[in-house]
Image 1: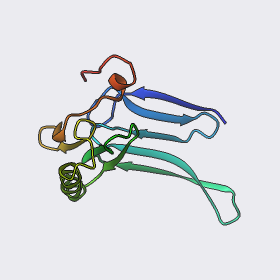
Image 2: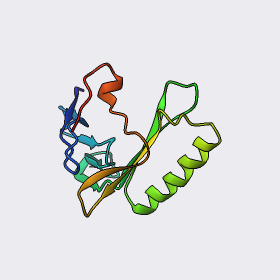
Image 3: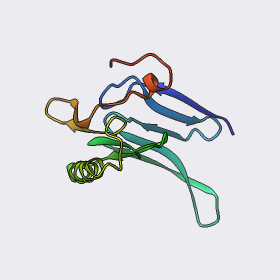
Image 4: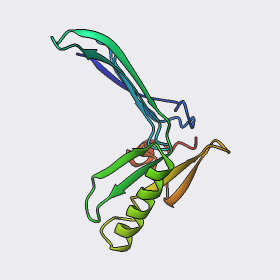
Length: 141
């Protein structure tokens, strides 16, 4: 099995560092954007006997993205949000745990996709570009 991981332009917000993972053998792929929450997946499905029988193509509109990091821990978690309700719940959750001092406000953020302006808005924190924290040049897209 050979999986290729690369960065592409997000189909929704045009952020230049959306993740694209392709299984070269099966042609299955995954695209996700840590900026707007866009998610797309193409995978093969198996029947009851274990044989490949169909393809499933899933596209989830990004309503926002959540990134959080526990205070004193270098590993961050996150979630791609697909509804306004998801964003509202994430905002409430993030505010509570930042206020309690359990989440690092400098390493956590919440974004929201604005359908009217077709732009990503930062709700809490500051968007952290993974390329700038991994030693790469910051992306201004």
